[in-house]
Length: 256
Image 1 (cartoon, rainbow, N blue to C red):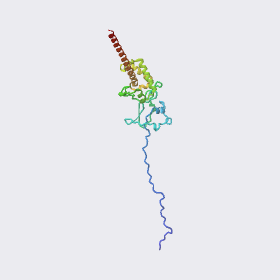
Image 2: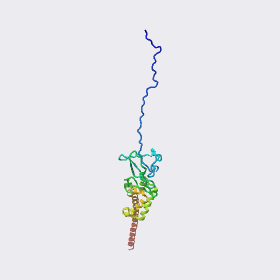
Image 3: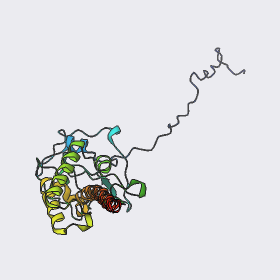
Image 4: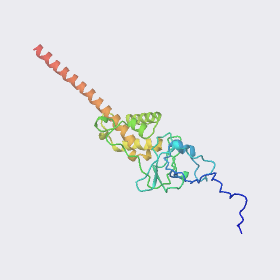
């Protein structure tokens, strides 16, 4: 008996319409830091400042943009936020504020130090550093010294008006209470200290400068030039007296 076969042909597998696809994850760049290191410039401080004791609202303070961020790293592994020194007309924060990485900066840590029209607020940060005097002596740039106006303007952000006001005041006080024909070292220390104290009262920001060196530098510079000018004048007068004496002697000899 013959085996029965189906009348239709065997149906073959249909060809694969879609080839096998191997999905690969794209290479990812390192995740950005959630809390970048920020150097708070005076403009940022004024823009984001919050009154002392007030709780900051999440939506009330805009975060600084990337172009406003400057990377800075402390020597001990902690993030340090150094703030440039500021002149009398601008509010300045504490010299250095140590913060833990990832922690927001407390606006209450900001130290307001300003000139005659702004009250000084004591810094809550212990161990604040003083602004040190540059190396050398004022008015001797060729011998490793410095120009006091340039240093205050470029390194400590004083305005030209602030510098002019302070230099003018110190010059007037020096003429009033010091002997301008003598050098700085020949002056009475108590009179120099009195000028420093009065200048600090007028410009409270000077308290952040070690030993009030801006005032001492201006005094050294002014007294140096005035003492040298006085010696030149006295030298010319002495020469004139000697010439007159020699002329008298010559006249007497001719008469004899």
